[in-house]
Length: 295
Image (cartoon, rainbow, N blue to C red; front, side, top):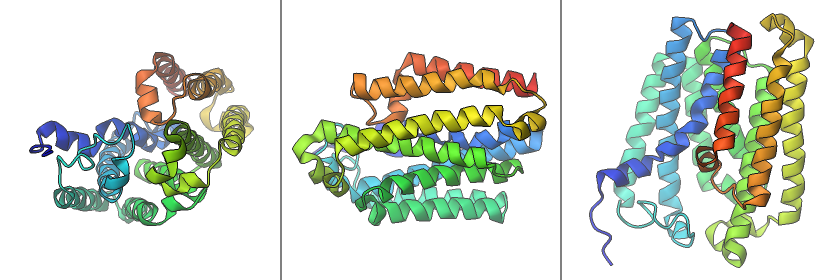
């Protein structure tokens, strides 16, 4: 059956704009370096955010082209534009190339260090799509590495320095989300899991459950330790950052409930955008952080 010509909605879906929320980590350094109200760092950080939206869309498109056949076996991915045949692989690759080149061109205007972060991100995504996604655990580490590169790019754009706290939190949180996604895929696809993703043949729910629990505790623990650290209090001029810790703890617990109580987690961004308690928690956390740091 001919799927028909691609529509504007298909091209927009190809970019996966809902996943751009992940690129918000680019702005973390701007806020926590106390540069949010400075025009130049703010403008550079916003440009960096746009660049990573383009770069991540390029990576998603290439991944969709490579995985098109397998996505047709997935009940939630078979409707994607490339998998369904509404957009051809050739046209999709042209779109990915245009986005990638554009992202690198704009990144160059922000300086060689930022351009290196973007180039490293694109290279890591290409390596993930062709190799790393087939290696158990390393596939999750590679995705988490992409989040660290986003974070580092935000640090460079804001003219700040990467802190050990920002590095650890972004890396551990990304690992938690990725392993929760792998667990959801195992539960959803059952015996057909390996047909969609080779690496799922090596994953098991019991070890994943253990790792997810450990990572959830690590994320909350590292963040609480961050809010209580003496050097952090001296840098921000406040000892009350611990007031933001309950929001992080609740957010982690809420996500665990959604994973185990409602069998969600297959799309972390979609979960965030669909769950009102999580949205309110993130908004309140951001509001309290800004009030304490800039109030």
